[in-house]
Amino acid sequence: MRPPRYQIGILRDFLNDTLVMAEILGPDFRAEIYSSRGEFLQGLLDQCLQSPKLPGQIREIIQYITYRGIPTNGLASTPTNFSGVLRSEKRHLDLNSAFQALDMKRVNDANLVHAVNDVKSWFARDLQSKVHLIGFDVFKYNTRGEVLRSLLEHLESFNGQPEIPQETKENIRSILPFIMTTGIGNDSAFSVDTAY
Image (tube, rainbow, N blue to C red; front, top):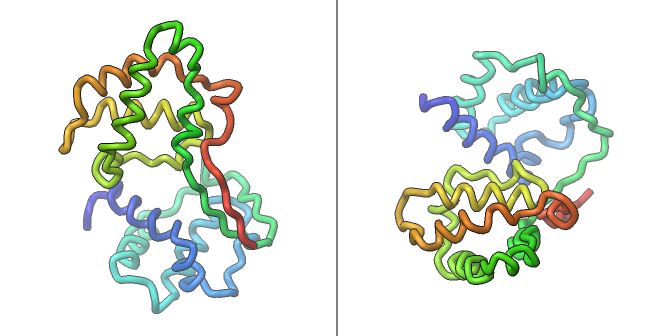
């Protein structure tokens, strides 16, 4: 069995696939009957284990996690807030909107417009998301400022291949102080498509 962090990442990706989960859980799974997040997770994983369609690797991970026990305190004890209406949401990151969290007046006053342009050009030309964004979970964040700061900090510390040019990393460092977390920086970085 692989390390728990790796297992949780695989399981999270599996559980986030709404089409697969709808097939695995079937129409009878009732999320609203669980009063806490821990109870919901236990019920969800138990229901997954009942399905003959559950892939073997996922089955092993779920068995391992349930054997170790699902927490019932802390965050796991908080309410689920399910209303009984099933809905599916897809969140889409608009990177241009995230860059609006930069205070361009202050960037301009600091004579760093070239730094912003270099970083944006690198994104457009050289970003390889399957390489440069390994280990970065954009959906942990909500606002433009949070997403942009976390994303740029992740890239600034990236040491893999293909390398991010040192000049681009320096430009990333130079614009970090100009990311706003209020006003437009506090707006959502995502557009959401909802289906009921």
